[in-house]
Length: 237
Image (cartoon, rainbow, N blue to C red; front, top):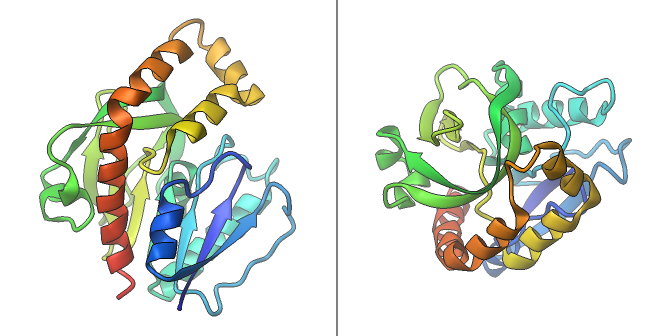
């Protein structure tokens, strides 16, 4: 049985639709909730891959959140062992930082449904080749990163140039959220900190519009997510 280590930063950011897909493919999953157990020092021994989920903090907040250093060391260790690694949102930023790329505020926050377009390199990538041109994808982030050296640039949006990258053969960073379902999106919209974030943007983000758009795009997003994550799972074989 394949064992997967999952690093979690807040209670409401989970594997989402990736969880049942992994279980159907025989994976045993261990979550490490670093918000609840910031002193945790998980080991990669016995694990076959690493997933790093999203969260509201900045990669650069290592003084306020020393556990981020633990994650950077774990990602580096997974790379040395040639394990498949998937970073989602903050997770992608942590991978970029591990590879020496700077992480910094994006010009504008992306919260809600946005067009994401694959690059030319994505056409030959096992995961992003599943994109059929520009796709409507759910986002929730305020920071971005430079592409790590020698990585493949896989996707962009009009507001954020670096939406996805691959380093080597099996290290992926996705700035966007393919794993969400409707209850997860609703929960994110109701979390107090997230509501404050939206309010601070002075009307640029409309939660009602996000709720209206979700039924229009969610079914296709989940189909796309199953295809992309299915290809990620194939990396383990």
